[in-house]
Image (cartoon, rainbow, N blue to C red):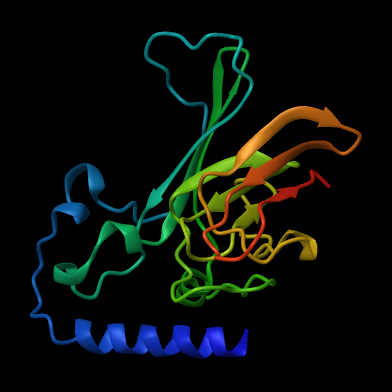
Length: 208
């Protein structure tokens, strides 16, 4: 683990040094129009609805995507590296009860926002988590492909609960393509994940 962290730190440092050589440019198509980052975290209730919402959906409709908190030089920004932000709309009985958006509480985001660091293991060169979000065992999980560990959130209004290592069950969950096993057991549903770590077995994460 120490060697992995040292290699990650060295790669990050080298990447930053190379990026400093790129001339500044204020323009980047992935920071403009529909891709422009949302600047603030918001909670809105009593949402106006055009048309009607079916009464059957009950739950939180979520999405996640890159939403960089800071971009020192737009010329070197790539949307794969933008800080993750989760958006959610609570639906019940044909009503959109609220909308909320929150940054995923990675170390880099928490540091810039003056928030405490979340506990748990770290992995990879970057701590960006911005690719997929799913619900499991009462939490929302923010995921990224072949990079940092998943970041569970107990509820959308909350900050990150922790970086996850599935309570010691596996140290190689680094895929956005987790699947919920709909077959219920005494412990509830479980997740299936194919990891990108070589030499590791596929693991199942119980609901508890």
